[in-house]
Length: 447
Ligand SMILES: *Cc1c(COP(=O)(O)O)cnc(C)c1O
Image (cartoon, rainbow, N blue to C red; front, side, top):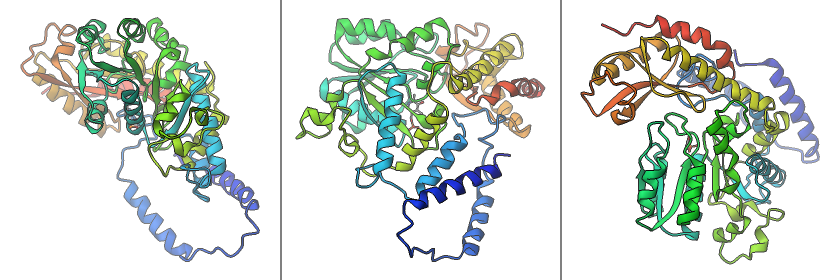
């Protein structure tokens, strides 16, 4: 299972080391007895059994990936002090570690300079990016119709105009459709999604950068899911080109709690231009915000933030550096290989309907049928039967427009169609893919 005795040994040794830093402060005692605590912990364990096995390769549904043991242990170790990275007073060491960790993330995207920090997740990170962007260049926010719904909702929160941009047949933002909106003027920021939540599709950043030259909008990249794929060596050629021009964008979001092996509560927002720091606090001079001297509380919308998150991320990157084709990258690439392998299998089997090959590690497919309503019904049945066999998938509701050209024989008797979706995020998915396929092929979904 996922409990490793040795993990507790390491934690207990590290805690003893940490205590040495504070051993002249005596007299702090726990008021509750350990028996009482244990009783409640057992109760918690009982309650937590009511979950899908997120840590196991047979969980191949939503975007869930277990944190690395080093992240889990470093996080727990830091909790003994519970530092607050709002300001240096609250978390001296963990703020320094946050700056180092964030600098490595910026470096991964090929940035020389940057300003950025960790936050609770992609939602908060995107909110800050849109907030800053709208101050520098007021105007409409555009994101593809496949972008995360957070962008339209955040635009409401920030009282900004929002319009969706139609996607092409690969669920990527359509540059022609984008230009049709750009010519009408008033566009401030275009959100480029690298790794859409539904399909893991990559918006065509090189083409959008060309349009930027002509129309002069800001580009915010939402790479909450896909950011780390910059490190892998098995993207297709177009995907590689997209990740190669990340040094030309105005802001970027990546979620270490998605593909970065972190516990929840770890997103990151980055700007290549440190001078945006002045927009967080108007009365501070620009020089205050050069990356050497930034004070995290001054450049973050959130106030109290877990120093433990920064410690966990820092520790994970010490063990698994963000090197192109390094161990971390190879693990990420394995999930993608699993997805490509599964796609080929599904495509060559008449039981299934597929759409287009995955750009990252997310697969969308459906059981074969000739009516959209039957496909939807079969997908739901398939999802349940798979769960009975301990294989956990996810469902996705698609507009029929997106699949029509791929499924010419299907009668679209409704506007949307329910399909199956699988995020193959764990490296072990590659070793398990044959077993997963055996289960998929065994499932009966017809009446
Ligand atoms: C997950 C995700 C978000 C939302 O991030 P949270 O960390 O869940 O708040 C936004 N955009 C994309 C592309 C995502 O994948």
